[in-house]
Each structure stands twice: as C-alpha cells, then as structure tokens.
Length: 450
Image (cartoon, rainbow, N blue to C red; front, side, top):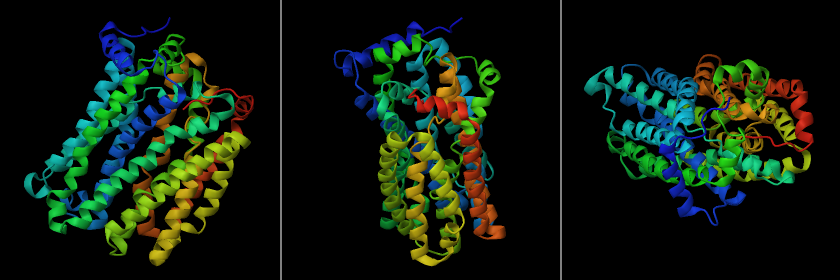
C-alpha cells in the first residue's frame, strides 16, 4: 500500500508557492534546472565553508592543544561526522515526508542546515570553554549531516524525467554544477577576508562572516525548491510513486545490489572531489608556508574550469553515453593518480598543474556521476533507492577522503595519495563492468535519475 501522499498541513505552503511562481501552473525543464542548481549550490556552499574553515580556522581555534598537523586531522575527523549522519537524516526526514509532505520536510531540513552552519560562527575558542568547543563543533557538524540527508527532494529526478530523451547526459550534469559554484562563492569569501584583514582579525572574527551568509543562501534555496515541489509534474510523479518515499529496509532488501553498485560507480569522481578541493589546501598550508588566499584563488579558477568541463561532459555523454564518459574518466583519473599528487610538492607551478588538471577530470567524471545506476531501481523504490545510494556514495567515496589523504601523505609521502585515488578509479570501473543491466537499459534511452 502506498504511503500517504502529503498531509494537508503542507498543502497551503506548496500551493502558495506554485501560484506565486508557476506560469499557467506548469514549469518547464529549464526552470526546474535553475531551481536544482540553486538548491545544490546552497548545499555545497555550506559544505565548503566548513571544509575551508577546518583547515584555516578550527585547528588553531578548537584544537590549539596539539600541533597543526594533528589539529587539522582532528578537524577532518569532525568533517566526516556529517557523512555518517546523512543516512540518519534521510530516514528521519522521509518519515516527515510521508506524514507531512515535502514542503514541511524541506522547510525543516534547510532551516536546520542553515541554522547549523550559521551557529558555527558563534563557536567559542578552546581557550574560552575547553573541550566544550570540540563537542559543540561536532554537534553542529552532525546537524549539517542530518539536514543534508533531509534535503534530498527528488528534484534532480524530476529534472531527468522531464528531460528530452536525447539530452539525458546534459540534464544529469545540471545538478552537479552546484559543487563548483558553491566552492567559488565559499572560497571567494574566505579569500576576501584573508586578503583584507590581519591574521589576528581574521582568526578573531573575520572567518565567521561566511557562516552567516549560509543562512541567507539557504532561505533563497528553500523558496526555489518549494516552487518546484508545488508543480503538477512533481505531484503526478509523486502520486505514481516515482518520487514517493518507500520503506528504507524494504528498499535495501529488494534493491541492495543496485544500491551497492550505485555507491561504487562514482567512487573515482567522489575521491577526486576532495583531493582537489579540501586536501590540497591542507597540504599547502601545513607544508609550504604559502599564503592561503593565493591557493584559494587557484581553487576558484579551477572551479570555473570545472564548470566548463562539466558542461562538456553533458554534451559528450549525449553523444557517446553516460557509461562511456564515466568509464573513460575513471581511466584518466587512474592515470592522473600515477603522477599528479607529487606535483603538490613541486612548487607553485606544480600545484597549479595539479589543480587545473584535477578540476578538468573532476568536471568530466563528477558531471555524470549523479544517479549512475538509478534507472535500474523499480519505479516505486527509485526515490528512496536514489537517496540511499547517494548517501552511501558520499560516505564511502568522500566522507573520509581528506582525513585519509592527509594522514597517508604525512606518513608515507604524496605518492600514497595517488594510490588511494587509484583505488577509487578501480572501484568505478569494476562497478560499471558488473552492472551490465544498467548499461543495457541506459543505451535504450531509459531515464537515469539523479
């Protein structure tokens, strides 16, 4: 029996959003794409604000009782908590979804996300409150993870289902643009404050401002999403169970093979994701004495290149297929892993080459990594299956990547980071090779949902 579609308590909110924004009560795929990009950008902005602060701020603010390397490793340990909490958030907010509707679910989840991020701006230092600062930061990081799990809204699925059949790769790429766009905004804010404030002022109060911005961005994202949740297309898909949450344990029992393969299929891109964003910033700051704002500018340039590479991935995938793009990009990432990490120790030019090449490959791979096997889910379990797969993918591929990479590089050298990245590429190729069913169905033009 189907779960309740939506409780009446959320209907006025969703109907008002629709009446305010939808033209003739219909929204075109292009408008859906804008809403999806805004939503994903807000999520990744919150993500990168914390990630950058975990390198530049928290080691000295929260972990001054250890050396800088250990403090950064501790910060990355807390960084991983959000990925562990995401499945809990998904389970909790799917219950809210079934009982109160997506409007209520998204409102609570995005206010929790923005509130958790903004609250980090008020964290006292270890010198002021001792270990309470560590526990408070950990609690807020868990809050971010729970909220990110609850922020899963099925909008990329709606976008994919409304995409023209010959543009599946293009529309699969669109939600992924939120990652580099979020990085550009977050890195830009930190670079601005670093370049205009003294070190003392930045560590005292300047670093807190990007966390305040997160709340405002999440409010904008909330209204953009509510507008789309209220559309007839979304409601029709929800009623047909395409976007209706199914019981979690039933989904795992019936669709476990697809969930596991879907989690490993994008592993190369997810591992590379943190190895060109979070990890290199920590390595450069700890080992070179280079100005942080200079490296953040390199990351901003790399993120712009990543956007262009993602756009290219969508165009290429519509010609040769998403599976081919994922497979070839995994091979290229494997080749990149053999020499690129050592460039981080080769001075400014080497760092730039590492970052630019990495972002090009990230755009190609990450642009097509979303929902790589979701068309293999049965329609009634696709929504829950896609959310579960996404959570598992991020946990396995990215959740511990900065921590593992920095620990390996510090103890064994940068070559070990390449070996770690190579393992992700091998997992991607293995998952794509095993999942023959997905390959066949994707070639027939069935929707690959994100």
